[in-house]
Image 1: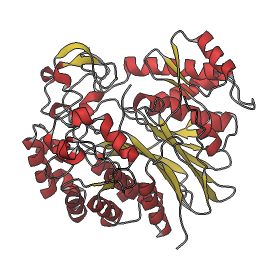
Image 2: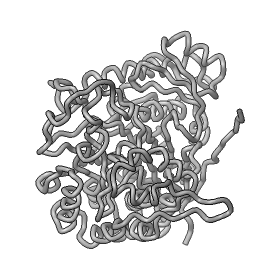
Image 3: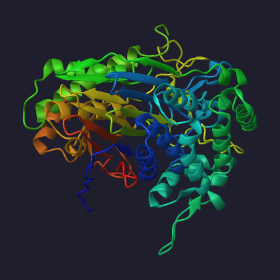
Image 4: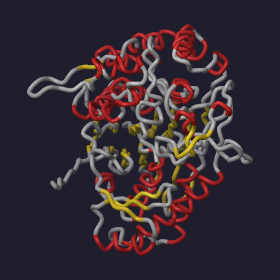
Length: 521
């Protein structure tokens, strides 16, 4: 067995910086900053670009959460645009079967896995409404301008390098079930793959560039109430998705100011809606109550306290959080952070839920649709049970911290239920041990995400691993590797108020993730 040591240096900038899970999308955002756009403009442009260069992760058929810090106001806002179940959804269409769902959320199994795969798994997408609202409230660029790079990228197609081919191969069996998806991602019935000493192939998604252009021309309202919405609904009907015109027309994103939650000497801001923000705040509060800051580096007792804090918080989350008080995923989520030269900061998490979402691409518009119904508990009578016209509890957790000096950090991750563990530890590493973004990103982590198991990075020192085994009943160990990724995929962007400079640190073990600095023009 080979053991590789992988490091990814942080990027320093006297201007702004964009950190994304795909370098090409980060370059788009950095160019927006260089052309005078602010952090919100860059985040929206990068987000749309991600839907073109890594379409299995996110896109206009998905949803997200954005946390925004405005330097002039010294205030933080949340823009919430999660998916919503169709008003026409019938819970009886999702009868329970044996076993558990195929996407490792540990929900009871549903007939034909229909809450995870195919037309029954699709919920009303909120992505376009959310980023449009963020741009209108906090941005400075026009709608067409932030969409232009994504339109160009969609027209070019994405490069099927080895990493992209690996992503497609991991879902090939399910993609092959749907002709519209199979024709794009499995041409000739095979995963697109470069040949030895030859350039990798290019994959073009039929109709996507035209759809984005129409979205640019008609504005965001076109997606929900205009000509574009009619095309999308016709496409949905052709493949059995039961979203209606009323579902689209009635969708609204929500923006509100966030109150700071204290952690040591920091202020922590995270979304407060149906996401993992409240769980993050609760876990940090538990950790502060049982530990003190000050050691040089985290030791076994500190990791034990992290694990116990996450256990308590997840027990509350899974038992009580959801759309109604009565009542581990192969995530395709992607996260990006942006800092501009004025100190505005954005943390944006966007997702299709599972990798390739529902695995069902709309055949004419080229929109890969989410599988948001998977986020609901299929058993009735629970806080997060499947219900029409409701939003499910999600795992997204884009966070922003503000230090006493005025430095502001955007921290977030992809990775389904593993997101909270990652974001919580990165905040604690930087706060309690004074780590810079690069050091925090390379510090080994654990994961506790409600399954009853504690997963620890094989890179942890033996004495720390021993302490965790002594304190938890179900413990496993895994390397933090490229594939399969057993931990979440985080990133950090920091505005250093004292140096008037920014720092970006990308997810270490992904060959695609990168931090890109604003370049002088």
